[in-house]
Length: 318
Image (cartoon, rainbow, N blue to C red; front, side, top):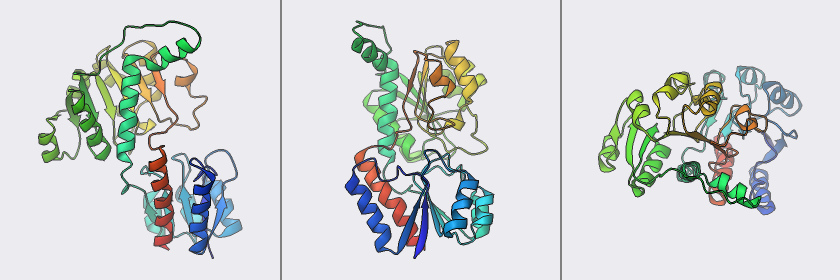
């Protein structure tokens, strides 16, 4: 029997108990035993290596972008054959070390979850512009709060990264009659033309956009691509939306821009350290921030598909 380490006990549990049972049965029927991370936080390389000493791991199901799948993991886990990521971000996985060790790295990129993330992006954009969370919170405390807020309809949306999620966001923006700007390394000329998108430089996008939405992969070239110089280019009335990766933004400089009102506000679904209960941006209690708990793909339909796909990736690889 082969052994898979699942790096979070939350895997499969968000929908209902029957869904979790079906996932466990799927592994059992395919001759896999499960080793769970019993802790409440992401796993370090040392944690994973200790589990390998006990169980000789054949696979790791990586649930969090904070799990540390480093060179040390591939050096010590000699029986490892596949690392399957629940999601698409692999910045926490040393892919080169995996290749050198002959370990396959797989993600759930082929599922249509990008539509779900695009939905949340627009929900955050609307909530931020119309101050929905603040109005709701105040009303629940018996306060009649009627702030003058911002339109979304007819405004300019700047999209960094025109991959599947960026494209899905652009299609939604068309329904709001927004002018769409995009800065992307690999433009799809047909999509750009069909949807009336204007390609431009990063600087041009930042200067013109009322809303800036990030949909890039995190790697060496994109790390901290948004910081103090970029905030200085943005309109004081502009908003930043990040449903991609926290590392795309210099978090300290974002906090400064929010406190100084260099930009009007930000909506954030991703954090450097998760759970982000002690994150400085949250701790400040700023009224120009809307924050969610990395729930871009957390819908019943999306999770059900993703949970089984990440498991299938393991079974099919070994």
